Length: 339
Image (tube, rainbow, N blue to C red; front, side):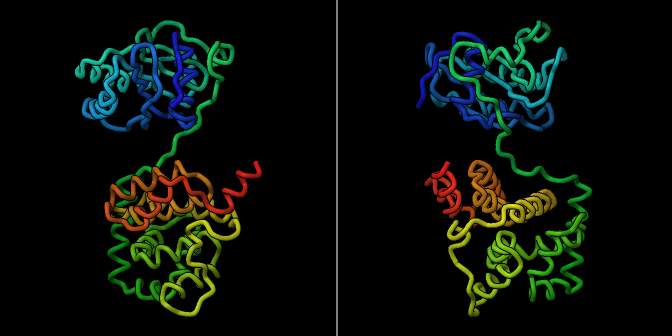
């Protein structure tokens, strides 16, 4: 654990990426203090909830910090938007956190905002704020620009999700699923290359990947191509196959990154459109592809969301173990060892 000293707001902002990691853009960061020292920080996403729900959310966040028994806390909201001379963003979130700290009898040492172009103080929101460039010349830790924190796709609009829900019912009633189950690689490949993901096509793929064997074979298809999908489906059905069972555990050569990124895009759309109770399968597929691309933080966020949707999702539990152990796919480990 790194212990840092921060005697000014600028030094505290410099310390944030070193305490909570560089992936703190679009985040709320709480820094607990023991005397004049801190050695950790709590990061969470800026909440997108109704104002009436902010007190309960803030109590939960502050409660997590109270567990380490600090003497005081600093609250920082990190935005990737430019603020210029305008009002500081997310003032309601900052007020809710300050109120929650007061309810917990926890003194608030600072309440700051760091944006893309400037920083400011929520205690005096109308006063002039400092340009972000001044952090480069502030004594202390080196300045690290925040990068976006790992995010799970937000649900699509209720109208679009309802359209997919109706399409799921129609696909099941029409018998179209029988054809899709007989040859799942075709509807997946069509969805992968579709410019617009129609509700019936999204519904078909969502229904297919609820089956664990089809889910894993489809992940292989998104990773390595149509032929790999055929081989993986044959392996799952007990047929002779050249598919590598450990491929999804990062064994073998590096995949075509452009294709995997296309697969990530498809799965993000499916997660956004999926009804509750059907999100876990595409989420764990998305987590797997992110991990195979070397994005363990995003993979972990997707795994957590998958387990919220289905706490007994087997592949999500396996991937959580892999991530906790810090394991990397062979090709990612090789690339980083060279770098």
